[in-house]
Length: 115
Image 1 (tube, rainbow, N blue to C red):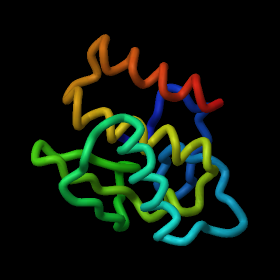
Image 2 (image 1 turned 90 degrees about the vertical axis):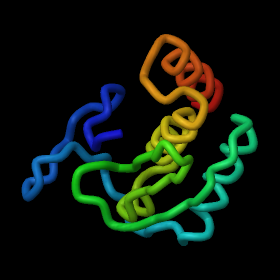
Image 3 (image 1 turned 45 degrees about the vertical axis):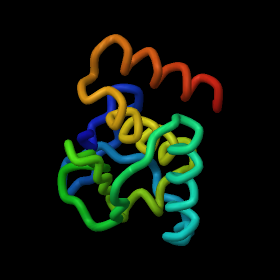
């Protein structure tokens, strides 16, 4: 999932030119973020093989074909709503590898029920 998300209004970082959500004044702890990911994984019914949080230059997150999820550390500074969108998007890739109709329908369903 690139840092350009179709459901967000674009605000760009001057240095990178990548769209960003407004940063929060304080970040959430890494363990809180991982707890959010695990809770959503349980709700969606998937089990990531490995969960990694590290700096990423071009993406907010990625999902490997082996079921490994990697999230950008910058997500720890984003709003809960934005984190939720990225988390749900990547976890759904464990069930639906592409962005087909079923993927988009499930993404809408999970996100509409939380906003």
